[in-house]
Picture 1: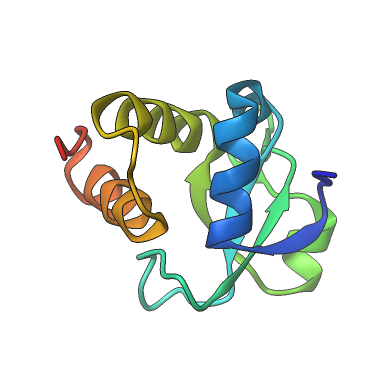
Picture 2: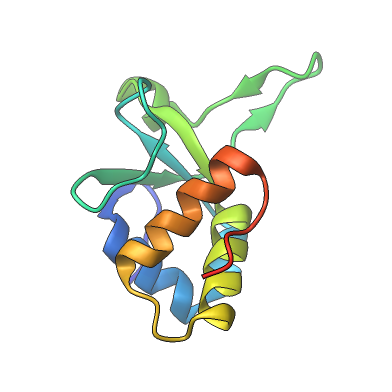
Length: 114
């Protein structure tokens, strides 16, 4: 069962979102590594609430994100959009294909055609 405030492998997270694209409205993906925001198959990713925004447009991250010194990596809505487009374009896509498409979108702000 999908839960916020939990670490997931990219494979697990992709499976959950493929099953229910609406999950994208409920979470953001956070990472331990700020040097590269590229997703990979071996790392674990924290899923938690979207950041709040204060009166002067500063993002206020969930307390668990701050306490764990994590970095924003991906919006759940964009994550779900990439999963949806990839699944529609290549129904037999592998986890590696999804990760490639997610990284491409993150870097180019457009979908990768597989």
